[in-house]
Image 1 (cartoon, helix red, strand yellow):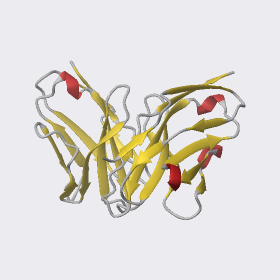
Image 2 (cartoon, chains in turn cyan, brown):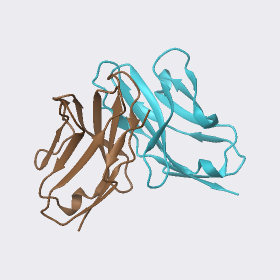
Image 3 (cartoon, rainbow over the protein chains, first blue to last red):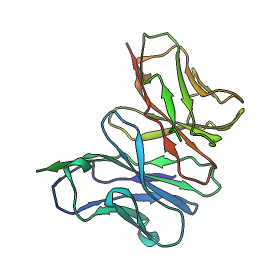
Length: 114
Length: 113
């Protein structure tokens, strides 16, 4: 069955520290991979996406993610976090020619301490 | 270019009433998706529509829920005879094709009392 796992429900990091949020997927077809961010009471904003090509993708707000097919992972990273990065982060997977439906992980809530 | 618009942003219904949620996709987008986010959970796919067609409704509950995307006007997600378990945030997303990133609206937060 298709699934996305975000093993960390809640992560707390200090401002200025580096960040890595984990995402593992199980998907039979060639995956499209996404990271979205959601602030409280808001909609989802796309941070970055992977469709094909270079497995290290750059996104907005200084985020990047690396697609590792052998590990079925698409971890999100940022070298230095700001307090404004505190939010809920969702990993999602879709597939080419599969109708566009996205499967979302449970989300990782990021807290940033001063 | 305005983003995806959803209204109302907040909707309160009593048990047994009907809820109608509206979604206007981004200009030039003909693909619309609806997702539901229950408290403390991720988003779950409900239905995928193109103009006048339902493409994939595999995530829709079998009863009380329906969706449409008419030739003119917004997409509508309709929930009949709401129950407390329907309380959730309902998000609409749109894209220009099915093989493209989806842009999300701000959501409609439905509360059933």
